[in-house]
Amino acid sequence: MTLLQDLGFLRISLLLLGIFDTLIAPPAGTYAVKQGIEVIPTLVAPAAGPIIMMVILFDALMSKIRASDTTGEERKKFRSIMWTELAVVAFMVIGWLPYFLAIF
Image (cartoon, rainbow, N blue to C red; front, top):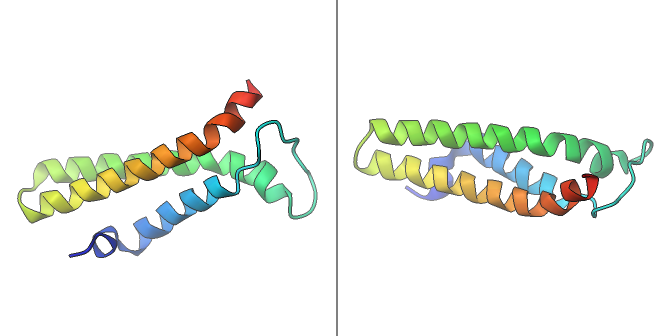
């Protein structure tokens, strides 16, 4: 089985959403725009980022629990899913850190 098959459609969609949300992150110090298409990167993405990150982390936790209950190939499958999700979360943290540090 390949990693994409192991992840499945919903996990892939969630991970791509997290990556997309990070890629449209506004630069640090950007003011919020309250009209037009700029609302998405300046208001929606910063609000959705932490929520998406928490959902990915919750799924990584569930994969860890599932991996501890199984053995063999099934265990490897869920461990690879967990590490893939943690890698996306690390990417999101690195991508959003300058923006959120500028707020404080």
